[in-house]
Image 1 (cartoon, rainbow, N blue to C red):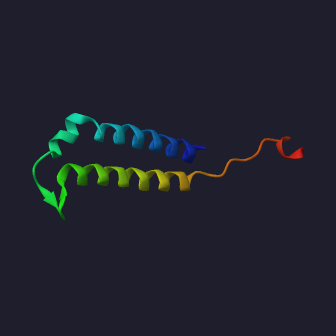
Image 2: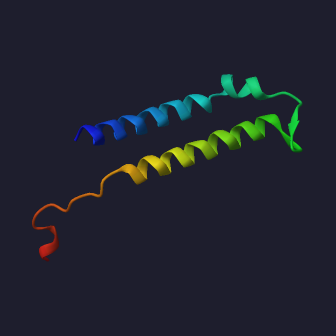
Image 3: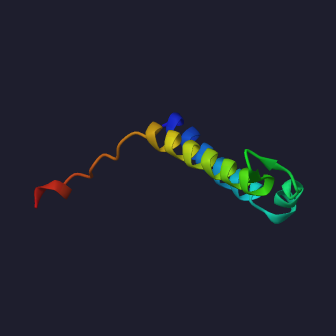
Length: 76
């Protein structure tokens, strides 16, 4: 039960932190005429944040225990 609470807390933290990383004031910090591998820095930043959020969500979802069916659901 405590592990499930920690995973759900991690999901909430990942959601809030990911939302904060996508807010314009922080995104504008990376809006410079600099290119990484030919990609503008702001695009590189947004893609990196998106990729890390997808990977983090996948890892947290994988750590969740499977749902147990309630009694009586499979008897139809």
